[in-house]
Image 1 (cartoon, rainbow, N blue to C red):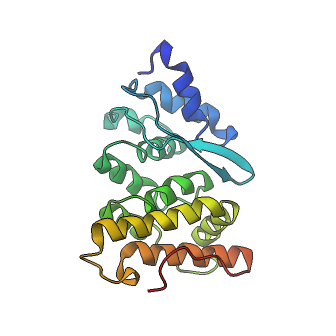
Image 2: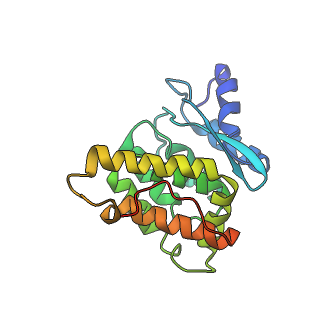
Length: 208
């Protein structure tokens, strides 16, 4: 449970979601264990017209299943978003798998941020969850396209991170960037941005 001294930390995590969700976020934080370490290095993006500040990492222990089941559907999705920022990669993947197929605009930055991290299995989980992304007119494609259109700098940084992690960790397995799962995912996200804006989208990755 949150301790009285955790008020500032709670406010930091409430800021990771649009204002309309504040009461639901606080309900989730009320049942989460106190953090051993404060949230690390928030990154700012726009969800719709509202700026949010999402932590790069959190350090709370996971909740028992029965506590999670007592939350509403929206609150469970908020919890999974927060734990997708956990310091343990296996925890991140477990919770990502619960939100990767969500069409909620406020879940999108949590998923896209993970696309720019180093765990190959997480990339594969994202692709599995975004099964509607290849299809023009799907809610998923429209939602992700809108997010990227509003956050071009964030998406450019994500592209560069994908290339960097491929080059550092996976080039031996995928000698050509075009064969790397992260490349395929970026191409789908870029296509969604093109659909949303009706114009060519800058590329920050190798052509093959």
